[in-house]
Image (cartoon, rainbow, N blue to C red; front, side, top):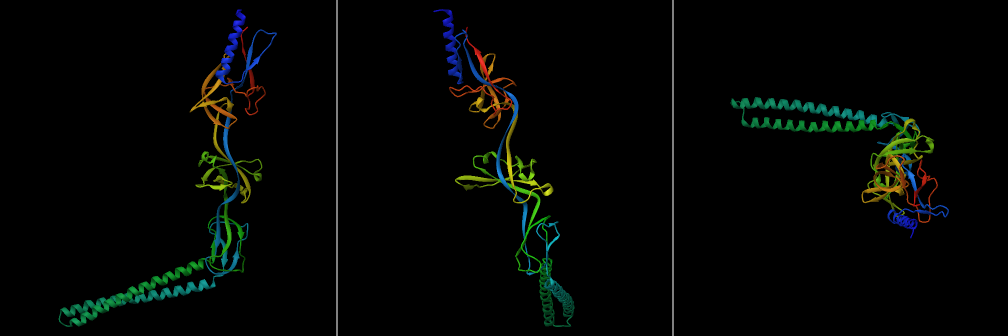
Length: 389
């Protein structure tokens, strides 16, 4: 057998060994007019880039705070804020006719004054009874009065003390009635609990309302809350404090930023899928966002910058990751440190240099030689490995 035939046989054996050990699809190139044999493999250049992983979901804009304003008393409405009115904290939202309340306050004041006068009289009576008891005891010690008169003086002190305690209770009760009357009088003016906007009104001036009747809905729109539904497959990736990007047709091309504020503790099962609620709070500068508007939430799970290669170019064994690199006309297995992976591209943080050729696997019988649109800035490069002559 000639040396050339021996060399060809050895070359074929090496190529078969490469196919079996590397797992890559190799394309055999036969050229009857050329005595050299070559194989071609698919590779991409490692290029700088970034990958971000996001969880997205639709949302409806809600007010940050909503308060249903109710009447604290029974009465007739004399004035009321209208839908869309902006009211500052402490300003009057609704007024009711308070004539009966004013009368009740004045009557309570009179009753309190009477109770205080009675208390003052009982204080004076007690003081007199105590002085009389002291004088009687002195006379008894001098033999001028009997012991029975001392007992009568002691009883007078006890009676005066009882009357004083009773009058003190009357004063407390009268003061409590006055406080209630004042509160009722204050309730004829219903004030804004915070600065906000009247979202809807359910009563008008002239209406007779009962205690507890809902009069209007008042909301704080300086901030808005957005909630998105996230299924059980993605919720484990979401954490409080992660960055959120908000887009809406009402904002045009403008994007707003926020953070995850809250994640629901339990799930709601919809179509046999467990759905969790993720919410965020956003400053509503300029009042551009209105309750009921739709918006999209995009939650940033992770993002890395480094060298980009197709995800399928990386193999993992337990916690370690590897790529095959074509260097010096040889295929080298390289351990790498990987970052974010969006399923199409993966970031290599360590282990590769920019421009190095990373081998990518191809399906049997298929040779990928076109530009890979899923790897921006990289192209599939047919790499030829010389055979024997």
